[in-house]
Length: 303
Image (tube, rainbow, N blue to C red; front, top):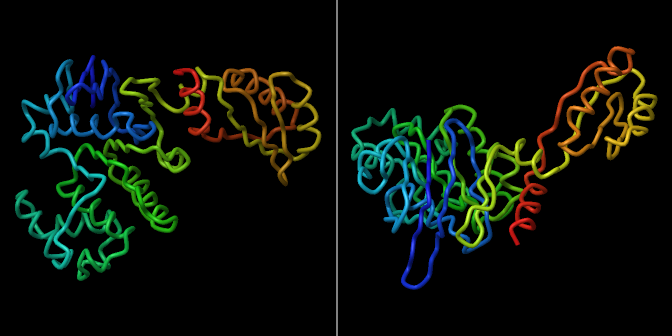
């Protein structure tokens, strides 16, 4: 879906990207994560064909973003960090106009508005919308034509907590309903943990880590939780905590929450299978790994 190989980008004497190499597979919601100034926005602009690389190779949807940018942008939706809209033009008029430019109908524009959760505010002008709904309007514009790829640059930047939740909810819904690949740049890791299944960590213009959250957690030894249903949770908890592969247990009603290193996952699962055979465990699910913990370990390892 997105492939960078040895990409270098310079601004004068400053090297913003220093041999960046990574891939984003199809169908994931990927976080492009890193501190401010790490090279996230530069990476997204190169991906969209809005900025030319100095060295290296880039392929997005099988196309070269710079050489085939016009063709690529017909298949990609983009939300910039600081979008600007005509302040006094109703959202409905703006969406209709942009849809026509792309050869789309009003029905197409309305579907994008519904997907972004802004359909009830189409009579409002951008200047009258809250910051959260202004970002939803930006999402609706990015969704025109149901793109295969969404590039979202700091979509929750400068929003209050309520607006952040609104935008994150919209992004999560889009990932689930559209099946599009989504790349979100951000330095706010706890927020990205709510929506991302894949991560590319960039620091100082260099890729520090990449992969699914589960794979990164396993490699880095981050923690994983098992939520185990049991008819005798206290007895099960006592059995599990006695094994050195378990970091901790907590009884929560008829469930036992088991914490362990991702590297110990198979050993814990073997314990749970034995407990199930003995009638102590009815079943379990694995809670997603902590993106925050993965990010911290990656940053520490790259220093």
